[in-house]
Length: 107
Image: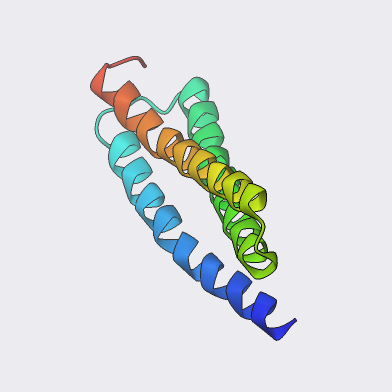
């Protein structure tokens, strides 16, 4: 149980830079001439949710990989890797969304 707790804590520490980078990206995207309308606030909220949900999926995939290595389960390793990659993609969408919309002047 101590190993699992230590793994979860270390994985959550690894996820912190994602959220720190995301908040900097949002501040730069939403503070440079964008109108803070209701739609912009809604998109900002959704992109924040994408980042946090994606980080949770990455952590879940990493824990799944750790358990698969413990039990020497090849299928579990594959599922965990797929979950981790999907989480990284969701985080990337959450970070890139406001930047792309700002670049295309979609507000």
